[in-house]
Amino acid sequence: MQIATWNINGIKARLPEVEYWLKENKPDLVCLQEIKSIDENFPREVFEDLGYNVETHGQKSFNGVALLSLHPFEEVNRGLPGDETDEQARFIECVISRPAGPIRVAGIYLPNGNPVDTEKFPYKLGWMDRLITWAKDRLLLEEPLIITGDYNIIPERLDTHDHDAWWGDALYRPESLERFRTLQSLGMTDALRAVNNKEAYTFWDFQAGAWRKNNGIRIDHLMCSPQATDHLESVEIHKDVRGREKPSDHVPVVGHFSF
DNA sequence: ATGGCGGCTCAAAGCCGA
Image (cartoon, rainbow, N blue to C red; front, side, top):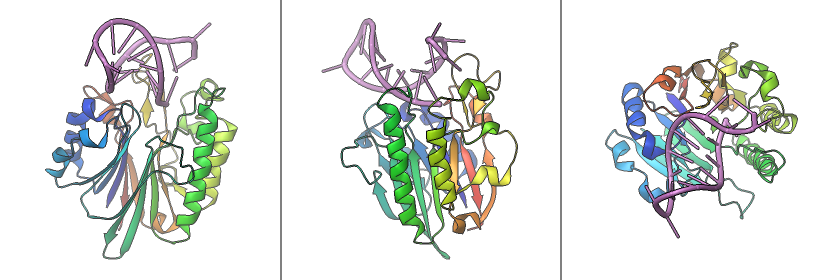
């Protein structure tokens, strides 16, 4: 089974690319971030025609996440618990069923958090604290659990082209990394890093020739519970997608699992 | 990154992302 994450930076602008990529790769389950669309305007029929079940948690102009699955959804939950006042659409969770049992997947768009001297940074940290609380609860189920999406976290030095340029940014500083480490210490494994100990980026800025110069960072992750990690076979970063016509600034990351 | 690009929007210039 292939489970993928992709921050598409706007479904309206990216629909032809997403459609092309799905046809080429036929992943079982895709978590999309930054659909930048309300639920009513999401082009679900396009994906349904390709055989996908579609669930969205949209928002006007900004954020918004979606799930596309070739397998029926057994359960879908929208919004990260823990703060009733949070109106940003950044979390959607589902359960799909396989003969061997359920597989639980959460698609997340973790807040960027910049600039760090504004309310955006504590919002990011609070969101991560809520994610940790939620993950602790879900891990008690001892199911295959994959929390995947745009984490807006650079896990380590190997994941940036320029440590000095990024260190101190909301994506790469102690308060953010401490919380990412907490998630790891709970038993969530960084799938890419578990199978590949080399430089591997998932994002290149639109600006300053970042793609041309390979000035990238790795911020899109598949974090796997022990029961999911047991079935992890490989992880592919579809880097070529960044070089296509009218690309997103993120590329798809695909986990291959033996379930 | 003192933001150069790109997407979004009450549709021009401003907000947002990372």
